[in-house]
Image (cartoon, rainbow, N blue to C red; front, side, top):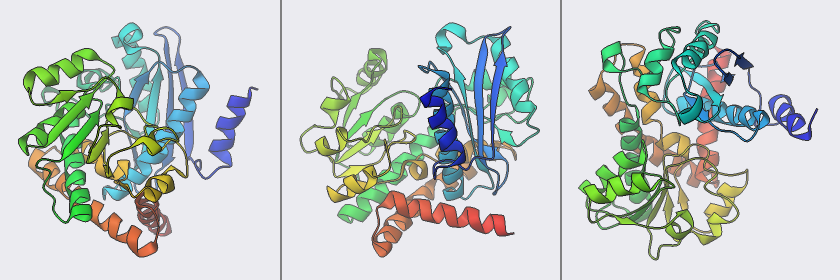
Length: 360
């Protein structure tokens, strides 16, 4: 057994990052499916979380990501006030090359075999059309198209929730929630980032964007001539006078290299698992930078897909997502009261809710 595998098993059974209830390894050779479904907790209800389709360097890396992401979903769902635990699935491979209807149907059968303990949705590399296919084999599927009885694209409310988190951060730091004339940098203008741009442009913020895909940036700059494109994330985090940095791509954006280079006073973005390792949140706080916990501000999407299980109503979901503003302010207040970083304060509040649910 490799050292990496030992690391994954140690995380699962022995570390504070583990404690998962169930991890399922899925394989369907006929379609080429290799997937991992991780259920971290069902204390608050059925585990809910998206399906990531990504070309991991190894199967061990995929398992580790599923463990990390599913744990994050437990905290996200708890802080969003949802009656759901945390789960996540990852499908291994390049979606552009191997994603087929046969593969998605096979994946749906694996999710269905869990009998409702895990409810799936979209994530990086999966879309509404994919969930429509998965739903043919699994009724515990959300993020479907309106034509198939679903709520459609959850990234709209994800972006709206991040926007509310930014407003709360501005209120806490500067005493005013307005983002007008604030310099805001967005790393990743795909599913969520492009909607976030719309909110910020409407409020007349000064917006900078970058993305590994040139076409994604071009789509934004052609639509909004005042939005400025920068070469890459390294350049973005060093923009002079940046007020807010919004990581909206993959996780690990805040690490030992990026944190010392940040010019922004606030970090508030849509990406999951932005803190590369434990301790980064203290480094951010020590620099006087306000960090809005990722799983709190990006909960708009999961609020939407959870609502889909009960008959989707967009305005009802938007009203719930708007409360991310109040939740973010409450976390900053708790952090100040306890003398800890906001990320630790959010964890305490979420853990308290899960612990109370287990006692009942």
